[in-house]
Image (tube, rainbow, N blue to C red):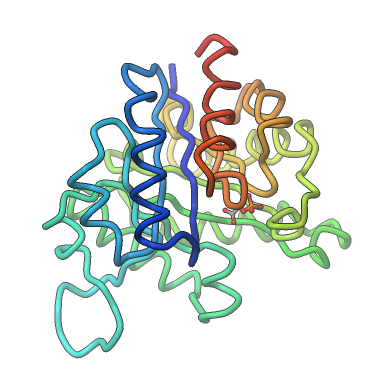
Length: 252
Ligand code: PGA
């Protein structure tokens, strides 16, 4: 049975005070959950939040794949390890589109994270144009194959795939649960073809893109969807707790 995982991707939002207040308002309410629940705050707040959090997973939003050196502005995996970060989002569409993060770079980051026993959350998803041209599966298949290049079967357990159609991110237009399920099922099939059925059954696949308290239950009820990567609705404690409660109430 795959454990559900909800991660709030804060992007470049929430001040230090807002982040600490968020933790105060949520952390103690998230004890003994049967699901994994976490946030990915800006780099600068990671250490403070990691030290103070008892129940929330504190994930990074990015990393660089080299261990150290002349890479101005970057943060290495060993630095994240030093402050006990376990999960790292890579290949988010905003990084792909605005910061030229390529499939190749996503693969290098995924391999480096796995080599360090960290868990990459690998984001994939198509643009609106690709969606309208019925190229979703083609695009996502290629992103997954490239991201997983040279990754071994025994490392796949530590990977999370986040399917995030770009047209659904920040637009309020979430994919229907049926569309999301269909894609996530296809992602599992791609992994089964690349590895085998056993491996594919174990990989956790999240959906992301305008997940809100009023649609999370329906989305996470789908057979192949194991969680959500949530932007806007994860920023404030009330809304975040509502997301978690919807899933919890649902019997997970
Ligand atoms: P959203 O963002 O929930 O605000 O659409 C999701 C994401 O970018 O991960």
